[in-house]
Length: 423
Image (cartoon, rainbow, N blue to C red; front, side, top):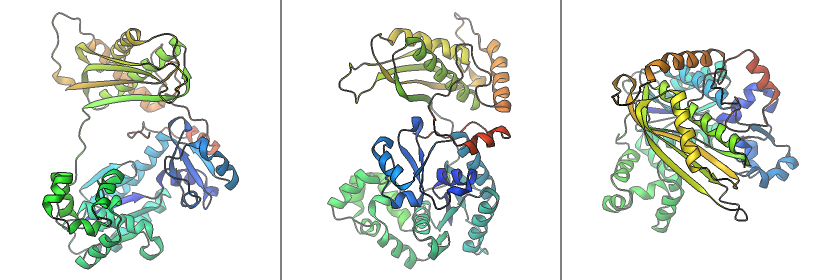
C-alpha cells in the first residue's frame, strides 16, 4: 500500500502558524510580485475566489469580505515543509517528496499494521509538532492514493483526515465519484476531450477499450488505467539532478533603466550558480533572455535571447555573471520597457569530471574555494548576505505584504533556501 500525505491549504496553514488569529478567516497567499492567488483558505474558496485569481480583479471582493492577503514567504514554507517531511519519513523507510506540500510513503510490508490508525498517528503528530493540518490517502497504487487523499480532503468530518481504499468495492465507489479531470495526470484539456467521448467519471475511463486509451494518451494512459484498477505501475522516485536550471522573473514594474536591468540579470546568474554548486555540477552553456510586456499592445514589443558555450564548464558565480553580462550587452536594446528577464544554465557535468580546454585559462580552481566560502556564510547568516559587488542584494521578486509576525519570526530564525519555486 502507498500513502499520500498532503498538507491542507499549505501556504495558508503556514500563515496561520505565524498568526493564529487567522483561523476561520478568509486568507489568500499571493504569487511572485503579489500578482495572483496561489493558495486559499476554505473560507476564501467559499467566496468564489479561484486559484490563480488576478489580485487587481478581486481587490473589491477582498475588501468587502475582509480577505487577508499575504505575500508568499518561500523560505518559510520550505522550512515548514522540511519539518513535515522529517516527521512523516520516520514512519516509513521508503518515501518520496513529491512537492512542497506532498509526499508518498511506502507501506508495503506493513502486514500487521492497522494502516488507518497508523496514519492517524502520523497526522496527529504532525499537527502537534508543526501545527500544519494534513490529509492522508491510502491505496494499493500511487494514483489511487491520490484519489483517496482527495476524498479525505473533501469529506474531513467523515474520514477525519484519513481515507483508505483497500477493497475493490471502495475503489469502485471512489472512481464513480471522481471527476475525470481530477484524475492524476489528466487535467482540464485532456479531460474535456474525454468528456466529448462520454467519459465523465474515472470509472467511465475503465470501460473504454485499451486501444482507445492508448491512442489518446499513449503508454502513459495504459499505466494510468492499471493504476486505477489497483495494479501497481509507479514506484517511488528518488530525487534526480536537474538537467537545466533557470532563474526567471516577471517584474512588478516595467524596467527601462539599463543598469537596473543588468543588475537583475547578473543576480539571476548568481542564483543559477548557487544551485549548480548545490548539486555539485558545472554547466557548459548559459542563456539569457529579455522580454517586454506582451499584454501591453499599446507599447513597442521586443524579446530576444542568446546562448553561449563556456570555454570551460563552470559553477562560479563570477564566471557566470560575467558571461550573462556579455550576453545582456549583445541583446539589450534601448527604448523599451522590459517586463521579464531570465538566465538559464544547461549541459551539466559533475564538478569532479570537468574537461578543460587547454587553450583557455581555467579560473574554476581559483574561484571554487571562494564560492564554497560564500555558500557556507550565506547558509549560516541568511541568503545574499555575501554577494558580488555588482548586486544590490534586493530579492528577485517583490513582496510588499509580509506580515509583522514573519518579520518577528526571522529575528530569531535563519531559514534554508527554498527548494521549490512558486509561479
